[in-house]
Image (tube, rainbow, N blue to C red; front, side, top):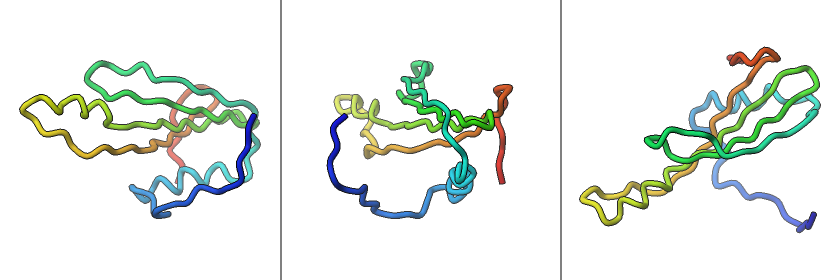
Length: 104
């Protein structure tokens, strides 16, 4: 593993939507047991995305889907104008039985 000194510099620290921060704060104080990563199996009509799943020792999991609209860049040659490139994080909590949890 290579390391470099530095810290991510945020343009803003206000989540959009605001509820996203409350979902993330549920992880405070939990212990991570394992981590998964993978490309999501989305239907062709949905933009490509990747996910990270943090599994905690209390048998809950936090899934963070990292999405983008980068596929829209392919519209450059079409009659439609592409929208600006954007990315987003979608946070979900999953209980030990695989059901979504709605914290807060």
